[in-house]
Length: 351
Image (cartoon, helix red, strand yellow):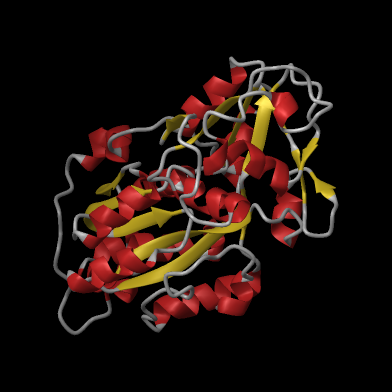
């Protein structure tokens, strides 16, 4: 195995370009040997695996996919893993249209997306891969905000606040007379869906007059350049940019102000903004394409868990990892959430 390394937070149309020289000799292989299990075949010899793997979806999960894909292609140079960043919603649209093998998501698949996949005859296996904590950030010059309650966040972000709440002292009377600049993910983002569900009580319920982008780096740059700016995104993007931004504490269900960290994301005390991250695997791709089976096995292999930590997210504990592996081995299809919300729901209980 090659030396594990830090990933780059740069979007690319295809990760294959990173290894173009070696990947050029690999062609797409869409058939598995009849009568054999492709997952077992894929582990016989990494050098024999070849073909294309199509991945798309969440910008939050992108760093994990990027890091895993780079290492997988080093070990299997005749493969080409293409990772797109369409957001969780955009990724599911492509997935249910049959355009991709794997869909990244920072929220569970929704009821209408499940229906779209069913209509297209696409069965999928839902695989939790890591935990994340949505991190609320402000400009480094912000010396007044330290801890926000979910209600105060809702005051900023609720649909009724559009055009009305435009200043920090409208959020809290002792905050300064400072314009409030809001930055966040676009509506195709799973982070947007989870945040609005957790803070405003309904998925997708948000004011529309904020600077929106599917590229979390745009949110980083917006808050960094705006003294009164506030934004939110996955913890990994804060960890990568923490010198340029200040993370706020969030009051949890116990009334305690908690700053985001890997420890509090892992133990669940960073609520309501802790959440699981997912890979959705097309069953037909896993069973018929050895390269996809090999890559999915690589994703959930405990030996590769360090790549999750290196990207700034929190790996799953051993007991949950075993349950996830069992879902794949048993070809357990569908979502453990049934198209519903994951806010306030313990992943271990669902598995």
